[in-house]
Every structure is written in structure tokens, then in C-alpha cells.
Image 1 (cartoon, rainbow, N blue to C red):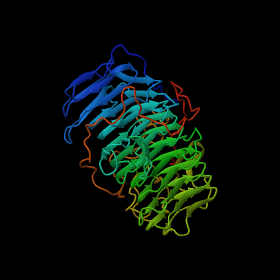
Image 2 (cartoon, one colour):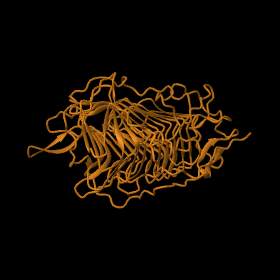
Image 3 (cartoon, one colour):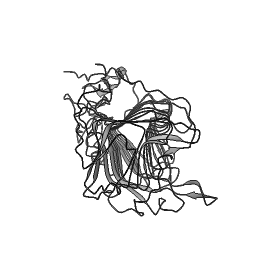
Image 4 (tube, rainbow, N blue to C red):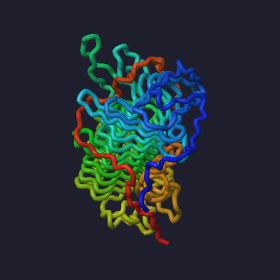
Length: 526
């Protein structure tokens, strides 16, 4: 079945009426919540149509009364070549921005911000200015000069946004389609606690970035990125990353910026139910992170390691856990772990095949428990439904069926939400079933097997974010920030929510219309 067109034809009458408490018309580029009298619990409609950019600021709800911002009367089409962002939000808290305002469209916001140097490069959606407690979903973000989403507040000379003074709480990013970016698909948080140099009052000083507590990134389709597919940093409390589909990353060839998913900078995350395909370096890259739990992921065809982890001798006593992952055809190691200061590390029930340098490779000084992994057969011998077509579900007679050990403390359901056998689960990301599971695993979420992304991400992984039974640490992501979120420390209409980390050249162009991806319908033996 061919993919359907991502841009619906023009209609005489749009289905999503503009019936909100407040309406932002096409000719209005900026909206100040205080000036407009937007109160907690209010709804804000952004009228569909073409605009150059949209800036939102000082939208402040309460924990019990969030402000909702949605599209109406069609798609909000944001497109520019010369700004640092497409859509930006600053100085805001308890805000939900959703592209579900018109049921005729899956992605109610389409954002393109193509500026690529020389002074700065643009992000499609940039949220900063001490914003906290927000949710963004059902966006298409494409052809950006830098990242698709950039979600953090830069350190400031007055210290208001810096480590110890501000925490970004409860950030949720889901059901977005991000593609053809020159930088990362998702750039969440700073790379690490070490900070970087800023000019303050004529002096060069090192400022340290704020933390993120309460991170939920799920059901995003990320493809054709110039740099990493996703980067998550400085997220030490309640960080969960699940059910994302990431493919074809690192296309710009920039050194150290070519991972499928990078987790680091002291983050402590649970990572599960993700599908990652094709990249020049590592699929999942865990660098200088605290305890990290990686389970029920599919990682295929990466040029270095499928999963690489290294504590860099930080976070003594932390654990790296790898359970029920399927890792195939890595040119380097399948799963690698380094860090003699770590404790309680384990690899159980992983299916790791055809790795160039070794399938599972712990450093010699690593505390390590290795049980019920399958590593010594070929992909062809594993008993997959159709590996040539990218279908790595198990056949009934696969050697992986029933070959695992009980691991319910880490995983109770597979990448498709199929319940695990509690006593003898299958090895790898998939549990054999002769019934269609809740998710079809094709990456688009619409169940038609075409992978075209026309229905808000993909369906593998449930919506609850509980990850089976693994604990990601931290609290329930509630609490108060160290600084008030009303300050406007972010970008201005002519400013920059952008990157100056480099000036990538080239990048994949978006092909509008049909993606025309042939999907492999699931086949099961009777």
C-alpha cells in the first residue's frame, strides 16, 4: 500500500472551528498572555493559514488548570528562511500546545525554519525563557537549519536560568513528525553539567545549565536528520523515552553528532520500545549518564555500535541495564559497556546478531551479569518473519521463543505491548504471538503498514509511560522551579533560538506529497 499524501487538499469549509476563549489570527505574529488576558484554564486557537513565525510568551496556567493552545480551521503553516525559529515560547508554564484542533489533519502545525548560518542556525520549535511544565504534540517540523525541537533555557549572566536556580519540570513531547533537519531532530537539555563559556560584562565566564525533572518523549517519528536523531541531557529525575521511531541519522557527517539517540550529561532515563534504523555511528549512545535502563528496543544497521555506553568514571555505583533488546548488523559492537565505577550492570534476554567487533562487549573492569542472550547465530537463522523487509517479529519456531529468563522487574511487555511470559519470555524485543498486537510496528501509527507517518507517530509502546516495571528514578515530576518563569530570557521576534555549534552543509531536502514507502504487512504462521 502506498503512503498517503501528507498535505490534504484545500477545502471549502474546515472542520476545526475556532471556538476558543482567545483567537490568534494569521496576521498576528506574537501573543503575550498577560496583555491578552489569557487566564489559567483558557483555550487559545491559532487560526490555520500561512505565517512567517509565531511567538508565544507569558502564558501561565496552574497545575490544575493548564492553558491549551491548538490550531483551528486547518493547518498552521509556519515557514521562514531568515529567523532563528519557526514557533517559540518563552516565560510560560502549564501550557499544552497541540496540533489536534482540526480532525481533517494529523499535524495541525507544520513548521519550517531553514536559516543555516553564518551567524546562527534556526530551530523549528524553540521553547526557553524559563518555560516549564509544557506539552507539545502533533507537529510536523521539517527543513530546519538546526534542530527540529530545541527545548531548554540557555544559561544567563544573571544566573536565573542556571544550575541551582532553575529546574525545568514536566516536559512532554509526543506524536510529532520531525524530518530533514540539519541538526538534531530533538535537542532536549544541554549536553552536560560542565557548562560552556559565555561573555558576561566583557568577561569570559563558564555558566552551568539547569536540570530537567520529568521528561516524557514518546511516539515521535524522526527521520533524515543531519546530526543525532535525538539528544537528551541533564535530565536526572523521572526521564522516560519510549516508542519513538528514529531512522537515517547523521547525514551531515559531523563528527560526534551522528548518533541515533544520545542520552547523557548526568541523565537517568528509562529507554524502551524504540525502533532505530540506519546511522553512521551508534544507535543508542549512553555517555556520562547515571543509572540507565534500556529494554525492549530494536536497533538495526548502525556503522559503529548498536548500543554503546560509557560512564566516563562519573556517577559511582550507577547501573546500566540492557534487557530484551534486538540489536542487528552493527559494524562495531552490538552492546558495549565501559565504566569500572558502575555496579549491578546486566544484560539479559538480548538478541544481538552479526556485530562486526563482537556482539556483547563489557570492559574488563565492569561489574557484569550476562544471562540468556542469543549471540551466536545469523540473522537468517534467528527465525524472524521477514528480515529483508525489516519485519523482525518472531516466527513460532524461532530459537528465541521461550529462551529467556524471568525478567519481570525490568520488562513485562514487548516493543508492541504484547505481555511477556513471566517464567520463560522470548529473547529480544519481540514476544511471539499469533494475534495482532496493539501496535503494528511500521512506524506510522495508522496500521496500514506503509510507514508514511500520516497518523501521528507509531503505535509501538503504550501511552502510559510506565515502561513495564522498570524504575527510572526520581519523583513524579512535580515541584517548584528555582526561578520564576515570567522572565523573558529567550528569543525575540528578530532574535535567535538557534545554534552556533557549526555550519553544516548540504542536508536532505523534503519531498512533499507521497513518501511511497512500501510497508511489510505482518505475516504469521498459522
